[in-house]
Length: 288
Image (tube, rainbow, N blue to C red; front, side):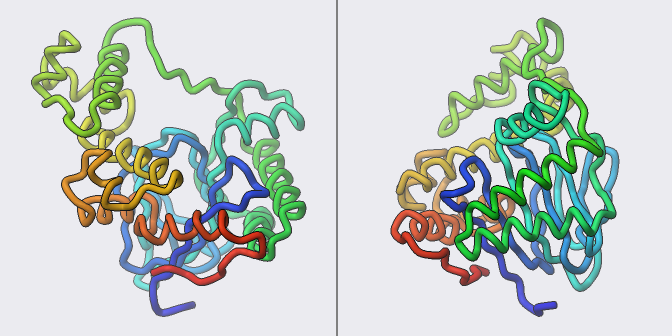
């Protein structure tokens, strides 16, 4: 395995709704965060540790990691040598479309397992990356759909991932979340959130953590990073993006972006620009 950290987070125009990450990490640790889509990862070397509310799970070479949308988690090296992996981040509608075509599952399905020892499926996930890197979107899309269909058939279940509950703690948490999302640059204090939701500070903290798996400040950081990705995708500079989403400066954005996305915002944006500017194959250079 390589002795230095490398990471590339990118997308291929022939795979709409799917981001790709290929990386080798040794010391890098992902902050606790959640994705609005799925995580489907194939570990190709070393050991990845995935920190979940119920405890850490470990995946070695040939292992597959599955995370449903909005699942709070961390990721870090499970051994001194770190880990390498190839990750697919399909949007919910991508997985739902495969489920509708290949199974009886409807709506937004969920995976019932998190870590699998499944070298065959891990190879299929790696095949998606290899095909995209060679600018073969037909093959990449084929491997993607076959891998997702295989995983749904073996580990899929129906789920609607409800975002709202009619009353009580979940409703308080949802109201607090909406207030935070609407005020990324000047978020309310915990005391203000509690007053706006008709709750006490500690009751709000408990309700929010139970509903979203994260305390409000950590959820807000993740939401700022999601907003930053959208602005970077649209061409905004990292410095302007940092100010627009509420980070104090660009280094502040860099730190949190890298701990959640896996690459710095500049490297992330360069990959997007490469895809837009060139009609040929993608740049295979890694960004540390």
